[in-house]
Image (cartoon, rainbow, N blue to C red; front, side):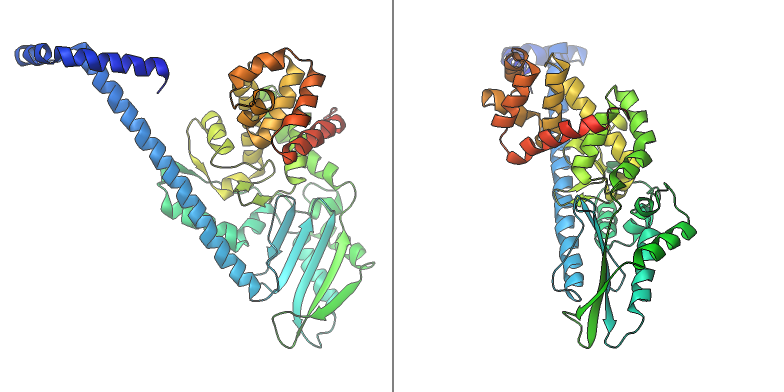
Amino acid sequence: MNGDRLKQVVSWGAALVFLTVGTTAMASKTGKTTSMQDEYEAYLKEDMDFQAYQKQVEQEFKAYKTILREEFKSYRADILKVWDKPEVSHKKRYVGYSSDYKVKKVVDFEKGTVKISAVVPEGTSNTQNLLSKHLLDLLNESTKSAFAGNAFATGVEKKLKAALPPERIQTAAIAPKPVVGDLFTGKAVPTMKETAQAVKAIMSKAQVTKAKAPKTLGSNVVAVEVKLPPKGAGVKAKAYLPEIKQHSQKRKLPPALILAVMETESAFNPMATSYVPAYGLMQIVPKSAGRDASKLVLGKDVVLSPSYLYNGKNNIAMGTAYLYILNDRYLASIKDPMSRLYCVIAAYNTGAGNVARAFTGTTSVKKAAPKINAMTPEKVYQRLMRKLPHQETRDYLKRVTTRMKKYESA
């Protein structure tokens, strides 16, 4: 409730105290109350409805957090039955397990490595062939099959659908984009033959290592680690370029910004996950950016499920929409386009309030805008790099602005 509206309601309330007798008399003769009373009561009902809705939203996200904790605890316990530490997916690392957890696939998109580990009985022969098969499975894996095989992600999805009314949650089928097969073959949709050829070439130079299994007596862990091709980021960027161009044109934002944000958020890991929670290529947080973006993209404020945000097209739509909201709404009072761009990039990571704090010590963009508008873009950038509350955001701003340059021709 804003201040002017509050004053008006208080004024109505005072007036109604004096008008009670007259209003009651009028109502007894006409069967109607005064228009002032009608409006006052309608406003109170609207305010109560809004407060009830806000409470519902808070309860939904509280339930979401509870589901995440419960499912992660179960997932972690299952991993620890086989392995000595629970390696899990993160923003720039994809970790997948077989259904019995005895095969582990780790793709580090930032470091550029792939490691396949398998628990096998002592004395197992042809371990190179065995690891070749598991590597082939990884190269043939899609975002759709990766999600289906992830007990944590599917468990969260299932419980969310059970906990929330259907109209309050947005789910989606996951488009089957390659997880890493495209990186090794250079093809957006590699064939089985192409991935098999890639595995043969990789394994011809790979070294298999062996160690005692940490949790399974009478077993060993055999593993192979290989490098991702050096041009992998370019392959991924090209794969998502049609969706990026579509949404950048719709929101009037440069494709280079979306690509640079995507690389910085996830290193183009299509199964990127963090336990904020945030999901997918542009790391959408369902409770904050996801809510704002869903109102714009879907026309309604809903909970975005893991399946919805692991769909690359949906994730790019939501991420681009949130950049648009920051640029054209929250930070629209910043006049210079370059100054505003720097603030938008920082706000994508830390929120508009923390950007304002770098200039005024408060979270008010309204108060910060005049100070920002009095500076050159270079001075704005320097101020952000000195005064942003978190070092993570300063590093983020530097990385995104630097990476935009290599995508200028996109």
